[in-house]
Image 1: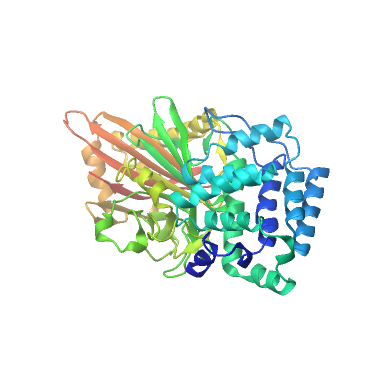
Image 2: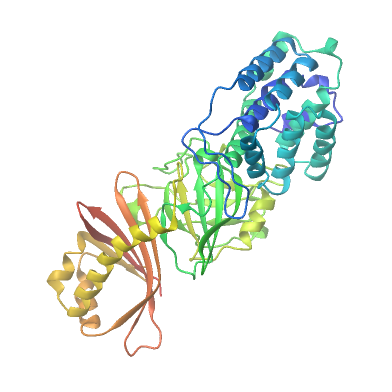
Length: 475
């Protein structure tokens, strides 16, 4: 990547990069910008932003012509063909296209400025696009994708007679670093076009206590981290960022497999960047992988963090980490100001599904009845009835001490019997991946006590019943 950045910097001859990459990268971006929508995905913007089309993509004449023009440009390596491809792709915008463009502008910082370059070029405004790209790489000299775009725009200024040979073009296309940058570009644009429907939340967040001020959800298929703010009005999407995941993909199973785990986690600490190598950038936020559900399924490994990038690198390829979730340092710094240790949940999913708050409330109510019945059996002192809520291999952790089986259950019943108890600050996080699990966190204060404790319980659905297999008493 360092070699690629050196070649991409503006002081080098743009001829070294070739105009063909412009057709391959920017014309493709123009097609994404102009496409009516993505199959099966709503493109509505989050609350407070412009709405985008949710229509499925159609093979429009403009798109076909643009693709054909891009192909011709790649073969001929001429400036005219490359510009024609992107101009055709950005034909006079329809209301739907304009709405999609507005949604894309929800991006912030360096990413928003990169998208603006794409849009200008797509409208045939090469010189303004070049000026914006020049300013972008000046302000973010380590943003490799921006450097590449700037160099490609400079390449359009070179006379067609100096085009690359077919052999040179083939070498560029086979360069893994080039493929990574094209994929980064594609995923950024895809995530910014395919916005979550307004007012929806990830399906895992059925209920979230207001003590959790923020929540995080990672969609690996879009290389996107979504930050949601939790208030009296419920969860609302307030920001989202490009991220990288494991170089071997997702669904971590074993130590060293270079995969990012999937599941429900919590931020466990915030590591001071002064104590870390430059490799981790602006800081690191460890999560509690493996969680009790992971352990139950025999998953191993650890040290999974949300962290930044080295100072000489703005962003990494979509799949480039050893299993961590990696963000650009400016984005991570925003996140570091908002997370709460032990209280900020992190969902990592292959693909997020977004649901309406009423649907989330309905699913939460169905589980609330299980918690209420468990609470009633415990208060009644009916140990036999209470055992029906537990799996035989149930474990309980209290102050890092683990108790197996039902050894702790008898003491639990004796303490709670006949006492009224108040539950507060309830959170339900739902996870499905073959099994159906629920992570329930709540505070409880027994009658006559001045302070209470917080419990985090892990439930597994078996048939029509929920069974408790692990519980943490957090204090």
